Length: 106
Image (cartoon, rainbow, N blue to C red; front, side, top):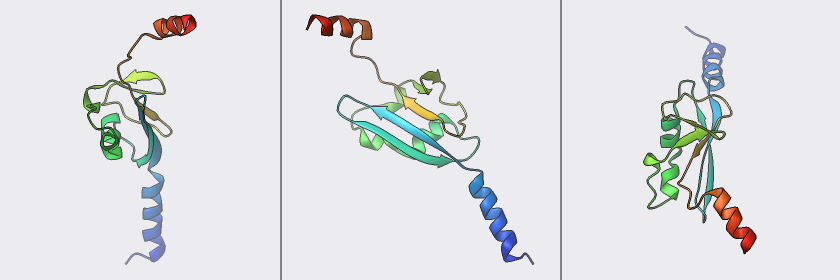
């Protein structure tokens, strides 16, 4: 028969094997950042699904948009590491250089 401390040791180890990541997406009207705990081996897509971030953005198909981690594009099958920030990228309305040019004329 296992002791109570053995059960706690297993539980503590299982909890320690999770780590925190963030899922982010923004529109001009709304920015959302969701932190979730995941297990090793979790992919970008699995983390997006678990975060349910799409529920906050009606009419936007997040499944078709490119994704990245800290500004570097990755595949949805990329495995996450502790502290990763999954970014869902939307199409630019205008190239940044053009936007600055128009703003300077403004």
